[in-house]
Image (cartoon, rainbow, N blue to C red; front, top):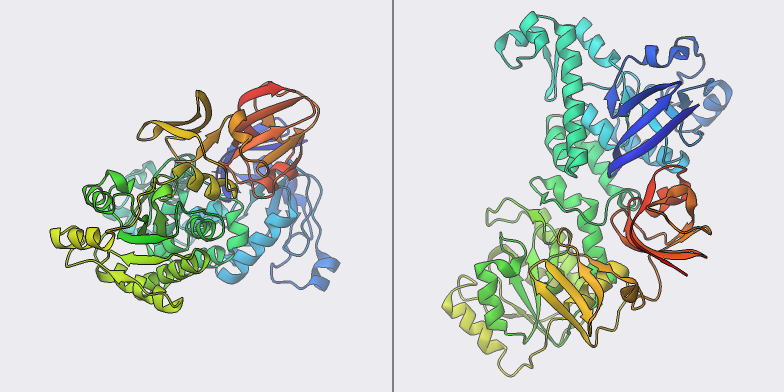
Length: 542
C-alpha cells in the first residue's frame, strides 16, 4: 500500500510526501531507488522505448507488479497514491517537442495524486526541468554514470573531471577528490534549491535561468508554454511574490496570457467614452509612483486610464494591484524588441476590438507609442498624441490636460473592474464604498462588509454577503457534511471548471456554506483522493 500527498504547488511542480511499505520520503528527492523499490531488479518488459508505436507497446509493454507502476505515453494507467515510473525518460530530454507532448498526455491520463519517477534522467543540469514539468522522484544512476565517465556535474552542465581541482566547488567530495560524492551532492543541492523555489512560488524564474545553458531545455520550455490550455490549468491565479520577467521566455508565461485574455474577455471598464494610454512605472502599483501621480492629476478622473507595459501589454487602472500587474519587475532599457512590440500591439488591438471607446489619447513616447500606433492601425482606430518629449514634462502634462478639457469626471469603479476580471461577472456596485488605505481595504455596503481586498494579490475576498452579488460561478459542491476545518478533495462532488489554485470560492453543500480559497485547480479537486482542496475562512450552517 502506498500513499502520495502534494503540499505546495507551483505549476506542474510540487513538494509532497510519498509513503511506501512503511518508508516515507519528502519529494522532490533523489534516492537509491533499487533499495527503496527492491522489486525493480526483477521487473521485465517495462523498458519499452518512448518512441515505440502502439502495436509494439500493446505487444510488449508491461506495467509490472507493485510499486512503482511503469507507464508509457501510449499505455498509462495508475491509481491515486501510486508512484509511476516512466522508463527511458532521459531520452526525452533530447526531443523537446515530444517531451512536452508526452508530459501533457501523461498528466491527462494519470491521477493528479501520483508520484512521478524518472529513472536515470536526473543530473544537476536537468533536474530543474524535470521537476518543473511534474517529476518528483529521481535516482543517482545519471550522476553515477557521469562519474564513471570522468565528468564533473554542475547545474550549468557536465565538464571534465579535472575542473574539480580548479575551485569551482568546495563540497566535501571536491575537498576529498571524490568525484562520485561530488556529483551526488551536486544533484541533492540542486533539488534542494528547486524545492525552495517551489515553496516560495519562484520556480519559473529559476527555470528560465537554468535552461539558458542548454538549447534543448530552452526549446522544451517553449513547447510547454505553447500548450497554454494545458499549462494554465496548473498555475495559480495569483501569487504574493514578485514576478521577475527577465528573459524572452518570460513573455510566454501562461500567467501573462491569462491576464490578457481575462482583460479582453471578462473585464468591464469603468467608462468607454474616452481612454488615455499611459506609460508604466518601475514602482508598483503604478499610482504610488511620482510619474503616475502627475498623470492622475492631469487626467483628473476625466478618462479611463490604461497603462501600456511589457510584458503584460495593457493594465487598466482598476487592475493595477491585481497579480501580476502589481507584482512584476522587468529590466528597463527604454528599448522594446520586435517580438515585444508585436505581442503588446496584438493585446492592445484585441482589447480595443472588444471595448470601443469614443476617444483614445496616447500619452506615450518611444516604443510604447509605436506599439499604440501599430495597434490603432490594426483595428482602424484614430488616436490623439499628447506627449511633447517626455511624458512627465510640463508641456506634455499641459497638453494632456487641454486634450481632456470639457470631458466629464467619473470615479474609477475598482470593485467592478476587479470582480469582472476575477469572477467573470459584472456586479452591481451601487452603494458600495471602499474603506481603508493602500492594500488594507474593505468594501462595505452601509455597515456590512461584502469584500476585502487581499493585500498580497490584489484580489477580492467575498464574504457571504459578497457572494450574493456574484450569482453564479466559482462554486464548489460538497457532500452532506459541515466542514470542521478545510475541505478535502474526497468530499467534493463537483466544482466550476474555471477554478484555479488561489481562486476565491464559495463551498455549497446540503448542510453548510463556506467561503475560502482554492488550494487546487478544478481538475485536481475532482480527480484527487487526498489533499486540501479549499482552505476555509468561514462556515455557515444552512
